[in-house]
Image (cartoon, rainbow, N blue to C red; front, side, top):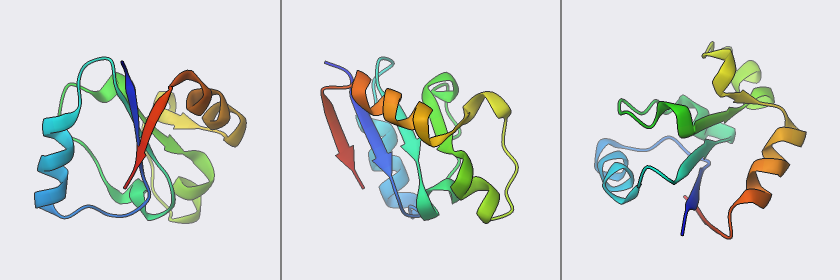
Length: 86
């Protein structure tokens, strides 16, 4: 079963390693709030998303295909039966 990992805070290196060790190719990662400061250096790029409002309010720039608007985030959340919030 695919899992959505919802990250709302900046992860230290230990927690980032822990997260990366738990993710499978079917899973997705959604960064919101201060979680948008995280960048995952892995091949999960296609399943990694950032909330647009949070990216813009922090003055960050990311790949456009990874940025979701609030309505897209709601659709993403509804696609997963299980989600973990960090």
